[in-house]
Image 1 (tube, rainbow over the protein chains, first blue to last red):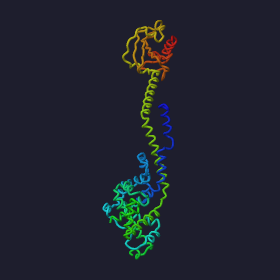
Image 2: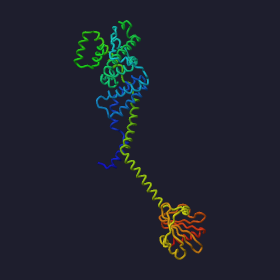
Image 3: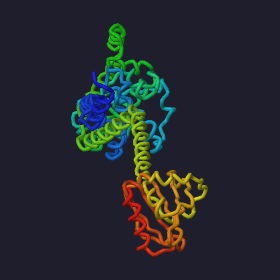
Image 4: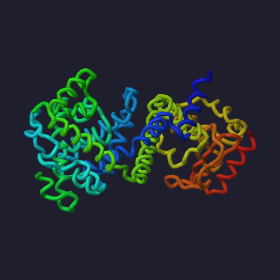
Length: 202
Length: 226
């Protein structure tokens, strides 16, 4: 055991030593989930620069709060920070005019079309850019819920925590978001001739 | 319409096994529910298939660089917080040492002769005071001591001898603990010539209307007795 002076000297040396266990641990975990974070940020903001800012801010916030991470699901924890940041900052700034009235728990509608369009015919011809574009047409709150569920594989409970809404609202947003997305995809498919009007209407 | 919400939960695997089984039975009875479930599953699969990773190496590097800066700042803050008392203590010790050093330096500095005429509060000393600086022979044989006085200048003791020889009166000042004279040895102080010198750690100043050669002769007599 060193004297107070030698301990002080040791700390002074360690002060400038490279590599902090906390940072190393955090970076190891964050690097793995970073593509998911950035992808979600990009699909939410629909702007590469905004997505970069949002992701960086989320990573910094997460690092500062890393001591409070419960050690369970790091990806869900990071996505929660990111979506909260997006809700508090970006959406307010952009004033996308989202639609609390649409959040009605019972405002569900079918995803399947009324007609007889076979889903394989509709979805198989679509390319990534068209799906991304159609996703961009879905209102932000619904889009966020669909992304967290279908792209990131989060449970309803995790989505509810991440977006600060009850599970019932998550369910209704998911149903509405998917229905809107399906309609948008069908519209793209019609425009590009993947399906015909008669097929859509049955 | 809540049955549609339940189908989403089934498609997402968010219901328990018993509940899922009940829904499956209901779906088998109602074909439109089966169609809905298929549509949801297909949509989910399409989203998963097409929403792929986006290149983000540059953003990750920026994050790493920002994390490194934060880590560095945290380390410095942590160190300062932990050792602030020691740092403050060291600073105080440095200030005290600098003060002591400065004070010690002042002790060996010579007195500026121009300060001497302005000194007030001289107190008389006995005539034997000349022994202190070792020139009693001249006090006895050559010079006459009209009076000896003591005062303080810059916190140090100054002894003044009012002396007289065949030519006339002159003043001799002595300050102990001085290594060397700063400034010129020959000065003019309030119209009088002054010769200022150090001998064996004592600064002497002799002031009179006489010229510098005569003052240097007095200095030589003082030095020869010490």
